[in-house]
Image (cartoon, rainbow, N blue to C red; front, side):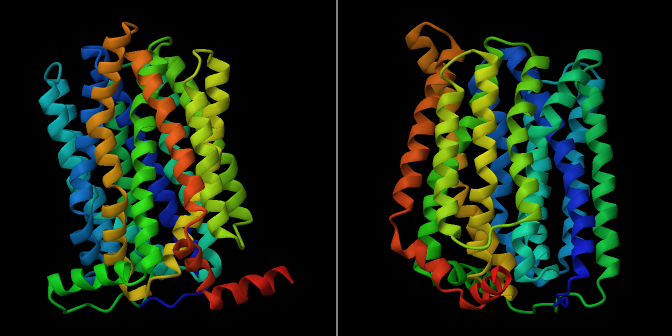
Length: 424
């Protein structure tokens, strides 16, 4: 395995920069295609289906992709996954250059992109563990949160202005260009690592089984992942229905501004955590961050006042890095390094099943509530978001009472010694 030194942080930053650019490009496409479909159909369910098809293939393939990340060169898998995922976007672009793309063509291209992207996430997550020391995890996670938030922070406002002067085809072209940059970044990092991961000759399914045992062997870790699935369910509702809610009283350009203003909350706290990190009380930071996010989610949809929407959207996103950072730390420090890839595959699969439920049901629910109330899809989306935010807050508060989860932090004495010495 790669020797962990402080010098590796520079390699991490290069890798992170590539993913940061990739997330912006992906966010442009996601925003543009979602808006394109909503303008064509006026249905939240159709938007939700796009999100589901962009997510489900990657989720199904997470576990085998995690095993591959432990058996083969992780940087090479990142290059393959990032590079080939551009094929789906290219397919949609070709369809649009020949005329208006049909819904099934957009859905197919999105699915293709998601299939190859599945190779990327476990390898990227495990590579961070390869490169960094435990003391660097928290700072790195803050930067990873910023990269993840870029699709909400930068992409919407950029896409909004691009659509004001051009159309969806320009956005797709820009996204395709970002794939080249991320592949180059992964290639440079791969070349700069002198000692790669030892090739694992274990049978594929035996490796997969070991990944499952790494997760299920600690009851607290398994409980945390199951609770995370509920959390993903409620947050998935907001991810899908926030846009149709805003579009019910604003245009695409305003939607981009609102999303960027809201997501700047994640930028602020992401930078803070990137500099300072979280040094202790990770479980408390986890449930408190989620509780505040739930409150922000509910308040986001109570009014059509753009300023109020921006403020509570900011609150929602500002609390997320504390939760994400803490969750990531608790998992990393409770799984052996050599099992990180396959374990993260299982962790991602189980926890993100909540997103599948959300993407499948929330659009249909919003459309149905809109018809029942007679107020349209905007009101249906608002009611669904408010209820989901309240549920997220309740689950977060209940999490604080689960002893097995608290033990995950208590059972990492080596890390706590390092932390205490820093604070002394």
